[in-house]
Length: 229
Image 1 (spheres, rainbow, N blue to C red):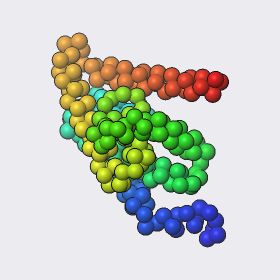
Image 2 (tube, one colour):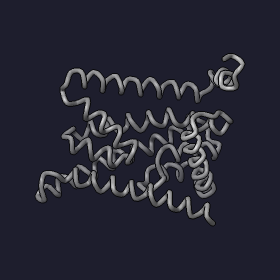
Image 3 (cartoon, rainbow, N blue to C red):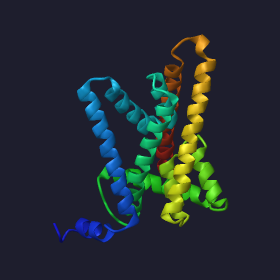
């Protein structure tokens, strides 16, 4: 074990900033999982909500996570807090793993494919955003376009050679502001569209899921098309 490449890599990275960030992310993830478990044991209905919100946010994006939280009758405040918690935790875990993958650490095959594709997307946008600096990176993370999330933003910041804390400050600030804006927008839409019925958030959730699914399918077909060329 001590002679393995993985052990040597972890031992050399143990005191790095990335290792500390990764540990913080894991602690936050464990705490969230513990909260879900306690609520499920108490059978108060909150555990199912917490689990469905985190899955919706991770799979379909922040808009879907917020709209689901509101559809499940959580307050706007808690919809914001939960989604900020989820996205910040995701960044703290995945950013160090991305950096380590660039530095040569190999994990599971699916994870390697994910980080390889993330690497390609980040390098593609890095050339464009470099001329605009940190303002461009902030807007990239904040704007609700396809492939402009915090993980891609953090990877771009890495290639822009930003210091780790500055990179994460910009990325997480843009992410958290985007969550606030989405929550405010969805709350306003919910109040304006109430006369169409009480299921406004469920309809919007379906739209966000459909858009995310279409985007993922389109990206796969586009990638296959490039390989064929």
